[in-house]
Image 1 (spheres, one colour):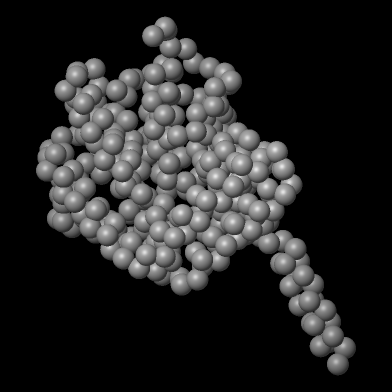
Image 2 (cartoon, one colour):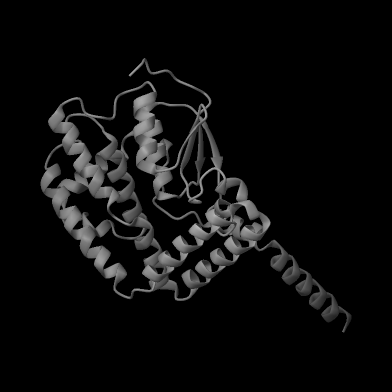
Length: 291
C-alpha cells in the first residue's frame, strides 16, 4: 500500500450516543485523524430516514464515512479503512498470531446484536414506547417513499428491515437470551485478558476500540455489575485502563443517555403538536383570567 497521508476531506456522518459511531470515533481519536462530523439525528427526528441521507446510505444507518469520493457504510469497514489509509499508530497488530487474535475478538464483538439488546431493554422497561417508535418509523418510510419516487426500492428494503427488527423485539425471551450470550462472551474475555493491557498483543488495536464501546454501552444500560465488584476482575482492570485513555474522553464514549439530546430531537420532530398544545394552554389560561 502506498504512503498514508492525512486528508481533511474526511466526513463522518455521526450521532453522539450511537454505539457504532462511538467505535469509529475511538479509532479516529487513537489515530489522531482530524475530520468533519455531520450529525444525523437518529432520535425522534429520524433524519437517517430522509431521502438526502438514504441516497448516501441506502440502509439508513450511521456511521457513514466519506473520504475523497469513497463512501463506507459498515462500521467494521470504516474502522479498517481509517487504519489503513491514515497516518498514526497502526491498530492492526504486526505479528500474525496477534493479528489473528484481534480478528477473532473483533468478530465476537460484531456478532452481538447491540441494537436488539438496547431496544429490547427499553421495551421491557417502558411497555409500548418501542412499538410506537417502530410504527412511526414505518409511517415515515412510507411518507418519504411517496416524496422520492425514484427511491421506492430502497425504501421498500428499509421497510422490510424495520419490520424484521420489530418482529425480533416482540420475542419475550430476547433480552434473557442476549444476557446469556453476554455472559458467555465476558467469561471468554475474562479468561483471555488476564493481566494483559490489550486484547491482542502489546498495543491498542481495533478489537480494543470495539470492546471498549461494548463495555461502555453495558455500563450505560446498567450492566456494569457483570464485571465490577470482583465479578470479573480482569475485565474490570482492563476497562479501567481503557477509560483512562484520552480517546475515551475525546471520542467520547457515553456512559449515560443524553436526555437533553433526545428532548431536543423530540421538540423538533413534534413541534406542530407541541405548538398546538402550548397554544391551547395559553388560551385556557387567558380564559380563566377573564372569568
